[in-house]
Image (cartoon, rainbow, N blue to C red; front, side):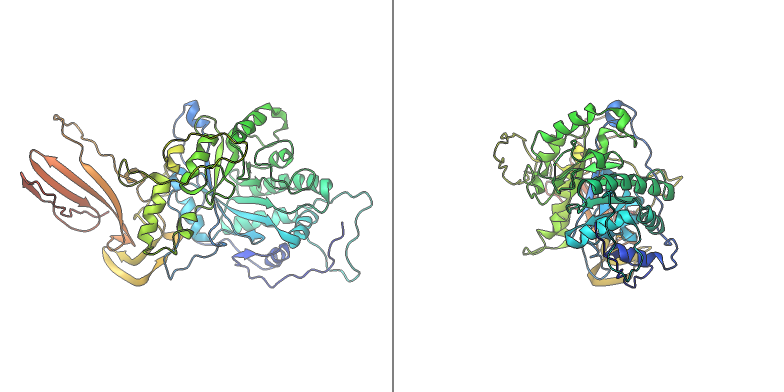
Length: 515
């Protein structure tokens, strides 16, 4: 196939946030660069549970696609992700050729034992040319015109860009790539074969440069004929791209029986084909939270799709795409604030704050030929995945100041060191919010000799007071002891508790301690 003979490499900085073309990546490689300071390493979480059901349970991959990416700013409040304990892998996604996750996002993920991937994407006409280039390697400058095709139509296979991409991931501290080829291949089946082989080279280079945990996830797009034909499941048309990859990410428009068909097809494969060992957990069935062609309607109807994927019993994993939906669909509504978004977001992920509260879900409109599935009431995303502990503190010290990565001030030892009315966002400051207290704590009496009622409790984030950071977690408890009603709230700072014998009205008095 003809290739352009002239190389238009931009003057790309060694610390460029992303790369628009592979030529730009070549420009980056010509400059001296060293590993970034302050990026936490990936450390695997401790294994929890030894029974077969826990080991064979599907995983959660979250694919971030928020307003094109790279929207993080320290001078305002923005979308953040705070449910790392249910997630195994996070993809930072944008429509640049090579998407490099920002250091703050990498640290937020690694702090809680989650892998962070970038994206290599080929789109539009320029994407077709670069998809050829990734196989051929670095093109020399030419004054005699474009390169001529070989007589036998075969494709060269250069490790050049596989090595550069692995070096980039190592230098910036992330753990691999989503491979998204959303263009028809100019070289048809011959290029498809070469591309499948190149994936194995990239996989090998990533593991050599980063470690055995490195991943390449193939997105269900182009097929072995070189056509762009989304399959919505694993089958013989996309199998050659899955085999050399770490995992497979299906398109979203699948029908309710496709997850079980995918599992059946996987188990029909000869294990000898698996040059990279695979399990059913390495197949991530896509869910578009925006609901575009998605069974169940997306958003608060995503539980319908999750039920068909069935990560607990069928064992398939889930790729949850576009969770920033919760912000982007609400931000222009009257009364919108970070606090109203947080209530909306946590309802999607962990359920309503009030037990028994009904959650409005979109209507279920089966497509032609689909059964009218009965899915029952809303179920939060977290109900489908186990909560996982962060890395062993012997390997990565554990610290939390209950920060979602935003705030209106910064506190040091309980005193404001910085204040801004516009607020700030910094994913690097994200820590766990306390997984066991959301959406509401579940207290129980210890060594109680009386059948006392369990106190009612609730949890909230406090953005106006903290011991360290920009926020604190407040747990409110209402006690009923021998005719005495006591209400207390634990958070950051100083306070007192109060009880009145025989009082019927409720009075909430803050009782606090340093977080």
